[in-house]
Amino acid sequence: MALIVGLLKETFPEERRVALTPKVFDVLKKIGAEVWVEFGAGVDAGFPDADFAAKGAHLAAADEVRKNASVFVHVRVPLPDGLHGTPHGTSIGFCDPLSNPDLAAKFAAAGATLFSMEMIPRISRAQSMDALSSMASIAGYKAVILAANTLPRLFPMMTTAAGTIPPARVLIIGAGVAGLQAIATARRLGAVVSGFDVRSAVREQIESLGAKFVNINLGGAKAEGEGGYAKALDEEALRLQRQQMATFMSEQDVVITTAAVPGKRAPILITKEMVQAMAPGSVIIDLAAERGGNCELTKIGETVIERGVTVLGPSNLPATVPYHASQMYARNIVTFLKHLVDKEGNLTIDTTDEITRESLITHKGEVVNPKIQALLGVNV
Ligand code: NAD
Image (cartoon, rainbow, N blue to C red; front, side):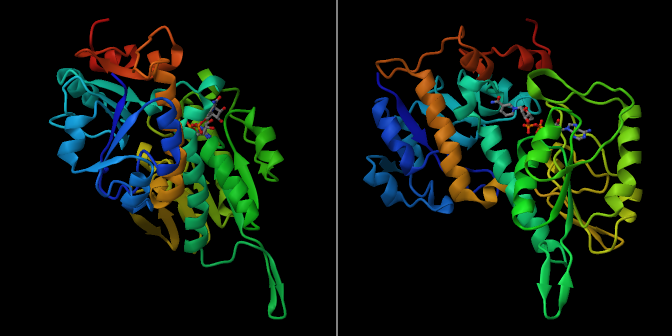
């Protein structure tokens, strides 16, 4: 039977993205997929029902979509209970199984198949399915816009009849996908930008974007982990990092932190004292807020003001740019779907393939991913 895809409205609070956009329907048509779309699923992202209908989607109420479709695509996968027309349905989307393995257990109990977009390996063959990178780029961009909007100063240098305004000084800590996009955006706005990352390979990337690399001696600690990611630093190396960063940070107008280690709480890189040493009016944007935060004072989704310094811990920034975030995410999703279907357009689960195997979390009533099995204490 051909692939029948269901697109339901997102249910997570303030989630405005949608997992498919009308633009990707040409690809879906090519792989022989039929698509059922819940009324209003794309409205918050700027994609009205008529645009989906014009591309051949069946528009229907949520229950009808559930009844007719078997593969559900989501931005954030909701709980499985009662959501699938068939208990053997398949869900694909962000579900953060490393932090939330219980959701996987519920999918297994419901007999449903679950694929995690976070777990798609970051190998070159899977680059166009890499939704973490797509969303991190948007978050990095939006963090700078947020900082510029909060800072009581201008970003660019201005020479005017009313005097010369110096450019803002911006430090980006953690130069992965989000950090590099933040550096590029802050540079475009005319700031003087510096960057730091524990992975030494990143130095060249920071400098090629026109930013200065901040030299920090971590006392020989090894920070390169597997797959291009960082390894968690021990407390002594983190102490050295904080100590050397403190003076430099106190001279910045804006600090944007994005430092993270896969599957771990984000490291604390900014203490209360370091915040207090910044000039009043300075701004910290903690992009690691959802993973525990890089600043000791961060409160997720809140604005904290400490001696005149504003600390923002935004959550789900990509949802604040829903049109383009959905467009990029939809491209990642359909590329992944295309990867999963055979020539006849049937969904196939070939676990000899690395992309399928690593992103597959539950199947046939079992949690099948070893990393999630280990977290749940399932005997392998
Ligand atoms: P991430 O969100 O896990 O981490 C963000 C950054 O924080 C990383 O660059 C990490 O080195 C840095 N970091 C960790 N601890 C730190 C500390 N104490 N101080 C300063 N920085 C710290 O990472 P990400 O942005 O998702 O990806 C990181 C890297 O993964 C990429 O730069 C790349 O090398 C690799 N990657 C590869 C592909 C691919 O090949 N398709 C795709 C995406 C990413």
